[in-house]
Length: 105
Image 1 (cartoon, helix red, strand yellow):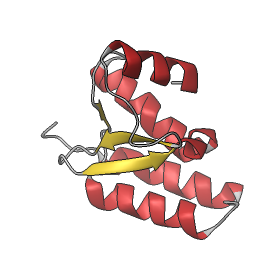
Image 2 (cartoon, helix red, strand yellow; image 1 turned 90 degrees about the vertical axis):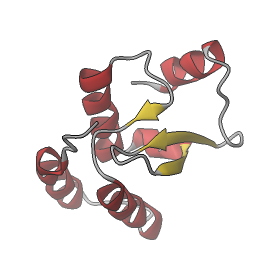
Image 3 (cartoon, one colour; image 1 turned 180 degrees about the horizontal axis):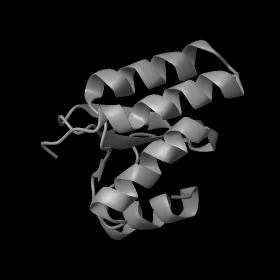
Image 4 (cartoon, one colour; image 1 turned 90 degrees about the horizontal axis):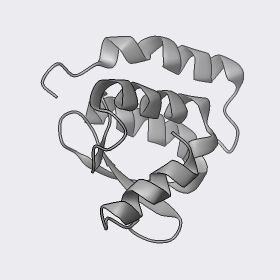
């Protein structure tokens, strides 16, 4: 899901970002997260959005990710703590994603 689609869907449903540089997503266990737009450039976050799109479709709002809140907090912690995430770290995080699926979505 690219930024233009995200903004278009948000405007269509009249759900705006929390501020100009963030948007809201929910984890599979209903935890709310404010996500910086810059995370859309990270492979691991794009993969989370892709999984959400496959599971719920493009028009589902609010955006609900298929991973649980604990895993999402871990992803954001790593993204915040390092300006640049090495390809090895991103691969490791992507390898864990299928195991983090929430079955009660």
